Image 1 (cartoon, helix red, strand yellow):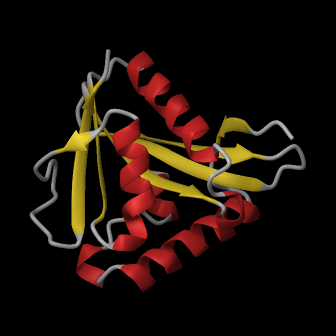
Image 2 (cartoon, rainbow, N blue to C red):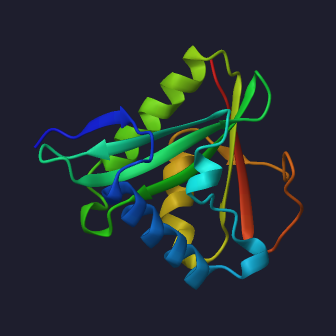
Length: 155
């Protein structure tokens, strides 16, 4: 199996189902006022690029998006790995790809919001491993005990 990262226009049923599971999981783990995951329309908005990680047979293994906040600052959105494929390198493959793409776009900083609950600890660990450090809320975010904010400078 050779997973590949592809730009996804979000028109396929498989990615819609995958993102539906993501949103359902976010609703189950975060209060409504603290759920910041984008739906399909939000991910299709101008300034957002969305990638899927696909298996050889075309099944979705993971996804992630980059939302431009300014020409130099982007936000990482909708990172998710198929629960059956966690801890297999899919998230690292995707995050490396997104960081490379953000740098190529001229971004000098990338930030993200994730949950502060124990459920999100693996995500926070991944981001820390990739050089992200805690930061105050950015963009339109406000302080929230259910959110953790991270940022990283890009080369």
